[in-house]
Length: 353
Image (cartoon, rainbow, N blue to C red; front, side):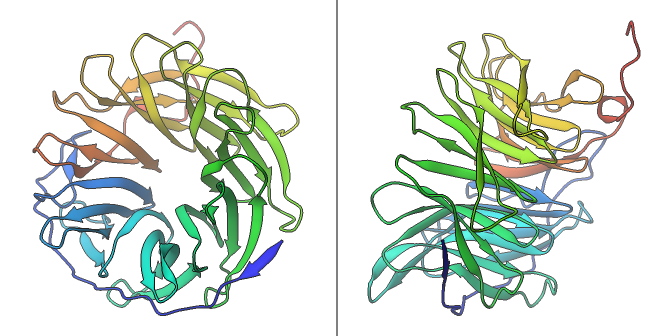
């Protein structure tokens, strides 16, 4: 099933801002843009970081975009409008987000996009803007955007080919009874959480054939599996099979035989994982507060990234750069760290070590 949305103008206000970041030592978290308002829901690709921020002065949410090629002095832009812009995602120079649009036919969430190839003058597009229909929680990889979509009954997963962003072509990924929510995408693989069987399970689809997505199960056991992220044949998620939240990894290169294992299963909580390449990151409260931990798929080793006595949550990773929410200054701010050293090497672990 395909549908096409009319391209509309998007209001984007750009304000380049110099960061107050202090020089970072090895593995030291650096605030990208310290401020008094809460910064949440980060994403990263390459050196482009995005998040949404509640601006108390205007009492609404806006999206911030930062190029952290120079982490000590990032280039920052703001995507702002009269209403809320939330839950951004980024791939390359393209940023997508959900935008609360108020029009003559009512108010709902739409999916908007901005191309930051020219960081000073980005170009705005509407990816999906159907009236009386909520499009939320977008994810992007290459020329495909996916999101959860509802006309008021239940949520489904839809996507759009934005090869020609003026004319995005929409298609259904998973549109059946029950809720399909919180999608993630890597190339032609889309994963999401699904409550078809009464609890939250993880399903995926190969969308190489846009009009015939091939749906397959990833994790469909008792208890809840949610928060799935896919990258290069690897899926990570949080799972409460043992009564608390643990982080699991699944190999989906062979969609007919998905293999999985727990990175860490303990009485503590491990939540909100992300993965790219051979590195997995998550938040972990084994020491009482929330810290960021990592796991090296090549060496089979867990390592600690933050140890500040306040809370660090919702990490995301691209290459060797990790960003997260951090409340060590009071409000939630977005921090970044550049990982290096033996903990993150691809060298396989030697026998006996």
